[in-house]
Image (tube, rainbow, N blue to C red; front, side, top):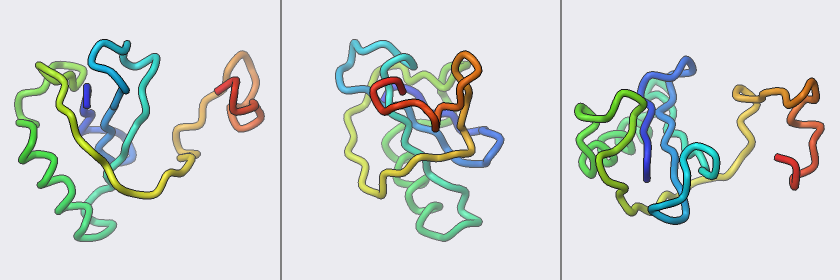
Length: 100
């Protein structure tokens, strides 16, 4: 885990993870999201567990951790269309997986 963004416009916590400690962020990361607790108490519990691993009150200005933390996340993988962007005028959903 390399970066945690706590104040996103959709109220999710966005956690940027990379395979290796030296992998560039955000160019080669996967984003794990924890929805707002208003969507279910388990999300509040998940946020509390994460805050127990990392002091979320002392993150860098971009949400960077002082040092990467190795974690395991469990949950469903899905495409979050809320974050859909365009690349050179082409919708990301129209791109092949190798282009994403």
